[in-house]
Image (tube, rainbow, N blue to C red; front, side):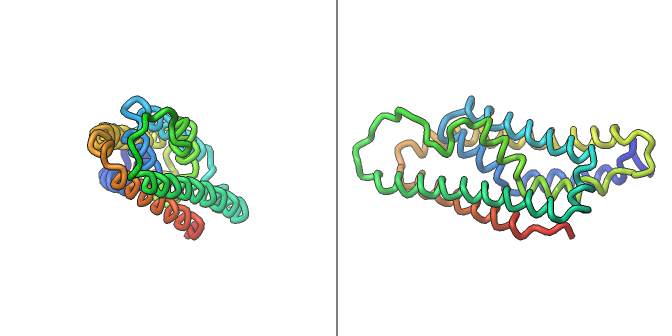
Length: 218
């Protein structure tokens, strides 16, 4: 029995909630932006995530998941391009962390420009979202399993499932943004701690890149 074309709704709700809570490039980037540039920039990044997720959900509704499954070469292009970009972001974060560590003993200088890896948070978050391995694999292997293929209005279950995961995402990112803004007050006077966290986040982005590069449709 399905609910407006959604099979086993509560299993999906629990699964989607758990997946949203797993660390991913989207949430880590938004947290980094919020802790460095404040709440406003954090929400700019979050908006980029929402737009990117909406595009991925729309593509899934239009049959992109089936296209990737039936065209391994296209999937290889998508995953390696995403892996390369996530690796590039990770390397930039690590380099920024090392530079901050090396300058930690220098007198405090007023900040006159935004670090390059956190500039244009909306655009960067949008690209990261579109290449997010967690989101891509979620849509390919989890999301589509809860849609009743015999339901005569497939747009309805897509909208229901999309609304659930986007609501969880909005609440989670909002919590991260305000937590990041609060942490910024603590980290501002602790350059070495900030540099260590930046490098750690960069390392996680490298791991996400490897994860996507080795991803499989099976």
